[in-house]
Image (cartoon, rainbow, N blue to C red; front, top):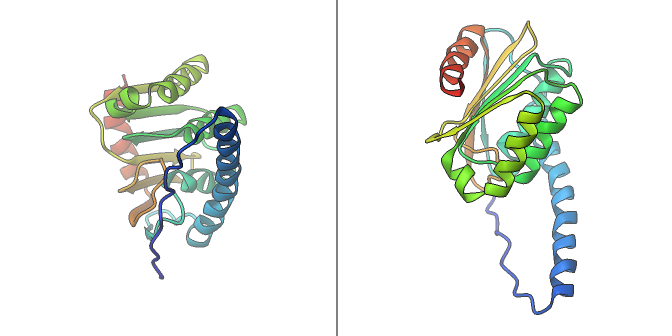
Length: 198
């Protein structure tokens, strides 16, 4: 596996509203392309879900984000999940929109999530958007002193658990993920998450 260094975008000073608006549009256009590239890179390492009792171990070099794995795993499970549990410290706007879209497109039947107080305080607008969006759909979200990163997906046959070092947000650095197919492990994580979310 080849690792590469990434240069983060440098802030640009803007002198007028017109320039700022044009720059914002350009950045948004780049992010859409970047998102497709991230999915393409993630598909290289996750081209199948583990068999029952197996695990897949991944070390990424920043070419894709943790959340990129979620819709790929759902597709590999047949395109539908009974439940989607996740725990993360923070999220970004595109994560939140994608999560609501997974529910609206009937790819997941229920969503239960645990996020960090950091996300609620630091990204209040994004937090409120996903909080209200999930509540309107009858789904559950809870915020507390949380830094865990766990995702649970099940279709009644496969019970996928994804654990890793990264948040759902962009990860331009080395991160590690382990993907399990284990009902026992799924139930273990589901139990403590249910206790907190309730």
